[in-house]
Image (cartoon, rainbow over all chains, first blue to last red; front, side):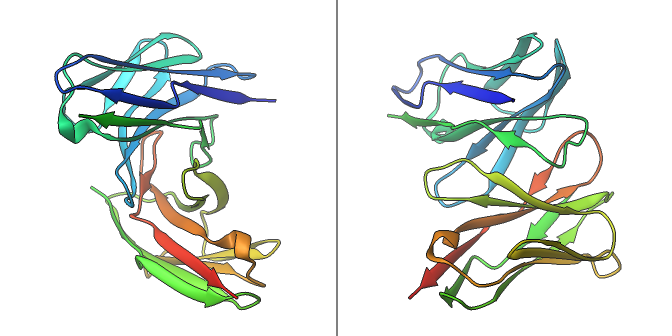
Length: 112
Length: 109
């Protein structure tokens, strides 16, 4: 069966510090991968998605970036965090039926 | 671009039926998905409609009218564990979804 991992579960970082969030998927090959951010009590905002190694589509211009160094690994990064980067970051994967996405447990980021 | 509208909050009693509506505006449309998210948890997939009509999965059903750009999620025999946020999401092109802002469902005794 397929499993998606995200870490860390929670993170408190000062403004201006770098960020690296990692997501890995097990039990499937060539998944579509997604990074979302969710502000408290709000909807899911798609940040990046990838259909293959090294292929990244950015949905929202901001100080975040994403990389996919391996087939089942998706990394979200920032060089300098802003207060507005606080939120619940969710990684998801899908097969060819991208309408059905499977989410990881999420990382709750607080920028202070 | 895409935009979706859902009510922000719905309250119902245990055992009742509740309907959560979703209207959308998209430049392209392939289908409407529904997801459930409990507080502090990750969203989970509930259903998908590509064609007009009703799709039933146990206590949950989802409806789509493409001509009206409208869909709804119907929850029957409500249980306390159904208290959660429900999101509609549109497949409008590309391998991605656009999510609505979510409806918080509160089930009361």
